[in-house]
Image (cartoon, rainbow, N blue to C red; front, side, top):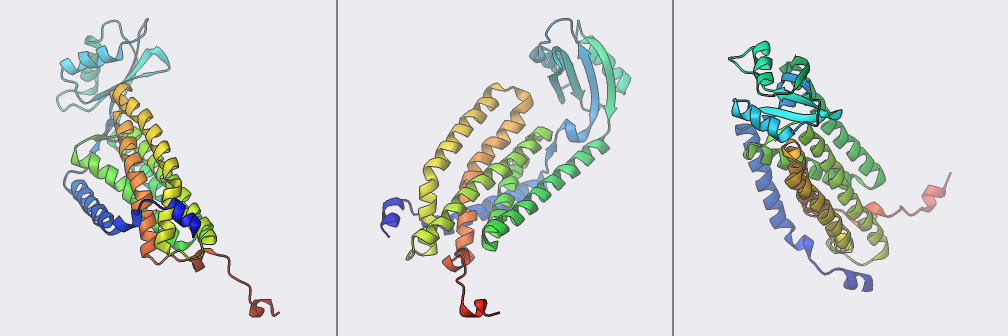
Length: 305
């Protein structure tokens, strides 16, 4: 018990009922925002006209975007690809312009640009991307549940899966609530958050299993508190350093990756919270105990042929 006295300082599990209420509230708000507002799908999913242009000098992306905004093209993406002089422009369909007229209007406001090619990407492609993205999330969660169940115990698998559902759903809810555009880069961030949150959860669960073997007389709540406190410095340092990088991306990375960096920022905070108050607290609530994690003792009946 000496180990327990030295390490357990913060009673995280003492707040598990309040955290459960908070998680339920956020979950309901997210579901409501998604049901009422829906996601504001980006051009990756909605489709549009893609125009590849090139310059004989490095392109000024910000100036190009500003020029296009002035003539009414507000729903667009302007990104460099290949070299610094090659630019890919994607513009949402316009009801009053066909593809030829749209391309001509774009080229008129981009002096010095030479059109390489243009094509229309239909919404069917976007629906296929959305379907495959949803499938990727579901498959990753199922694979995670199987892995944790095999490595630890089924209560850990269920609680970790609940945390993994909790995190991306809250991110999607925030995107829907504040009408933030959701594109393929935001989807990539969502998948990254699942992995990030899982890593935090696994670290805590691994320490829980180790402490059940070391600290014989502690309850499940005490063991969970001890394990979280022991991994707290690692969790805080990792989350803080990652958050600094992601905030820098959000502030200085440009408009193109705002959705990506925003989803990561939200995910880092929510993932850290859920590894403690969703995965950890739910495992305790489901009746986690020492007998489930310690190797079963061999009896005479087991040894009888």
